[in-house]
Length: 81
Ligand code: FES
Image 1 (spheres, rainbow, N blue to C red):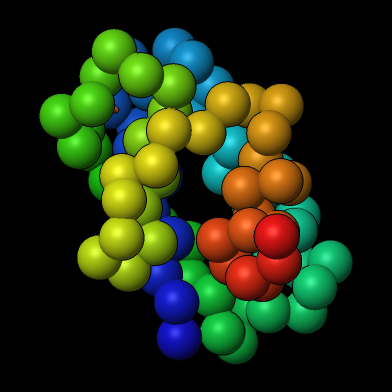
Image 2 (cartoon, rainbow, N blue to C red; image 1 turned 135 degrees about the vertical axis):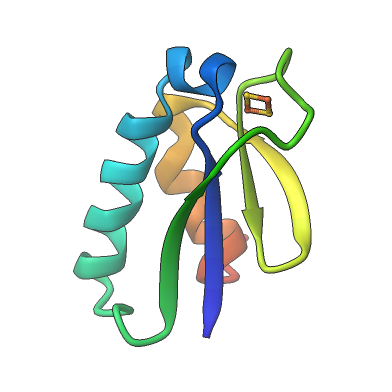
């Protein structure tokens, strides 16, 4: 089981945390990973000046742009390059 944590602190929220959460939910469903990937919201990872902070298990935080969620998902969740 992988856990993806998306920052919903005020700075990341303004940069689109909820759009990223929705997109990640869609990708998890599309790849039928509901049983393997858990999605959670969390407050501030201390990287507020960067794009939205996302952690996967203990890795990260990665900075994810709203329009690059699918690339991020493919690389970090599916393990594609
Ligand atoms: S608000 Fe997201 S890292 Fe601080």
